[in-house]
Length: 96
Image 1 (tube, rainbow, N blue to C red):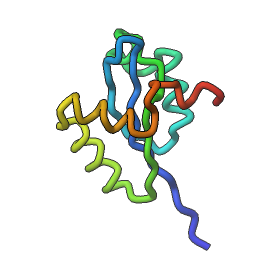
Image 2 (cartoon, rainbow, N blue to C red):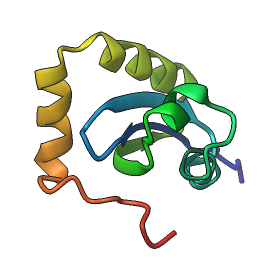
Image 3 (cartoon, rainbow, N blue to C red):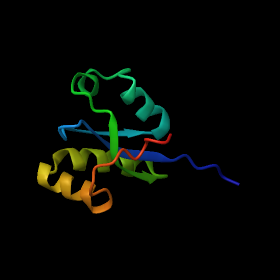
Image 4 (cartoon, rainbow, N blue to C red):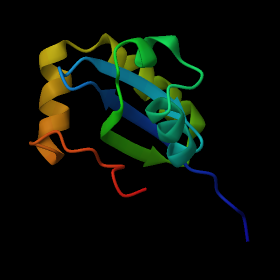
């Protein structure tokens, strides 16, 4: 049996809806780091502590390309993506 690793492309947001897009192989650890202001000056500086969107894949190449593509999107498109599944911008990791 082959063990497959999951990769996540995710969006963190501040209360004022400033956005950060990232990719990780451990979404729970990475969100914990953002929430506790570890390892990333940008998200710490702007208090981006809410996970508002994520998607998982077992393909690291796809995850990296998806992150790059999302970063190029217009802000309007990013907001539409988030609000499709999370219209109230709730913290998806609140109970983690």
